[in-house]
Structures are given as C-alpha cells and as structure tokens.
Image (tube, rainbow, N blue to C red):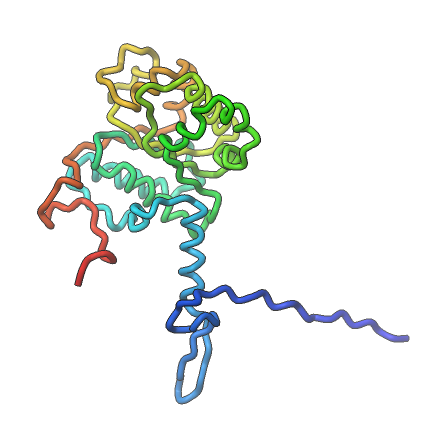
Length: 271
C-alpha cells in the first residue's frame, strides 16, 4: 500500500526591496562578515519601503511626515495638556470611548498632534487609518453630480469604515447644502459603526453648553460656520463622541529663534 506524501514545497514570494538601496542593491538581503564568515540578513530598506507605502495609503501629507509625539515641543500649558491627551489616545487605541477634537488658532500644533497619533498607530493598524483634508473633501463633493454618486465611491466607503479617521481643517466658510448633507451623513455613518475620529479646527467656545444652541458662535471662522450649519442633533452627537482639546500659543511658523521652535525635525536639520 503506497503512502501519498504531501509536498511541503511553497512558492517563495518575491522580495520587495528598494532598487536604489546601496546596502542590498535591490536584492532585499544585506551581506555581512561575521567572525570571518559571510552572512546575509534582511535589509532594512524593506521595512522603510513598506512604511513609505503605508504613509501613502493613509494619505499623510509630505509636509507632516516628520511629525511625531517625540518631536512635539510644547511652549504653553495647553500644548502640554494636548500632548498628554494625544499620548494617552495613542496608547489606549482602539480601547477608547471617544475621539479627539484639537481646536485653536493656526500654528499651535493641532495637525502635528493628529498626524503624530497616526504615526504611532501605523505599524499596528496599517491601512485601517486615514488622513483627510476636509477642505479638499468638501471641494470633491461640492458638485451635485459628484455628491449623488458618493455612496458608490470607494473613498467614501473607506472614510465610513476605517478604525480611525483624521478630519483636518474641519470647517467651511460658507458651506453649501451638499457639503452640510455630506458632513452629516459621514458623521452619522461613523457614529453608527462606532468608529473613532480625530478633528482639527479653529478655536471654539470652551463652555460645555455651546452644542445646544446657536448663541455660542463668537466669531466668524470656518469651523464655527460649519458647526452652525449642521443640525442640532448632529452637533450634539459630534461633541458627545469627542474630547475637545483647546490649544493656545504663538504661531510656530512665525517664530524665528531656534529656542522657540515648537516643532523639531532632527532629520531635516542641516549639519
């Protein structure tokens, strides 16, 4: 009686490496000399290439690729508190009950912290994260024809399903009905799926009662204009699902002294 032996042969997956790597020269293997013997190990360019591709999938803008929690330098108490909130969120995710809403004037670190959280989670959640510039999103959905087909859009489906969605620059100066409807549908879809979101936007009132009415609008800003255009239920649900984090301070882009730089990027410093 013959015995059938199952082959253990498996096709070797192709090695994906950077062709311009000077260490492995595109092979994916780095040759080393250990105790006089030649050894080979996986080249670090594999991990680097995968990380770069992940950043493209997650849509992290190039100007924010350097942002990390370790590179954030708070100059005010509110920025210190905001950094703590970001660190706790990154450590606990996905076991979090609420998202975050970083709000404040331009240049105080809102987007830096939002991107830094994504950077912390990138290796664990891969493409289940997504960074979206709300202004660009609103522009794409401003056309009635485009808006009517958004449910068939793969990008729209991804925005409603990813575990963590970053909505940067959340606001509109004069939101149209289509933009308001799109925003309400997006927020509702994520709330139903119990998905966390992180928002960044302009300064909003700090008192807790402002979502209940329209009298809280203190000044004209894209964020406040959009919030005032949404239905009361949408606004209430939004602020019930996030922790509002206020940031105050000088615009880091206008600071000239090296000792006052809010965001340090050691990798980009000239030597």
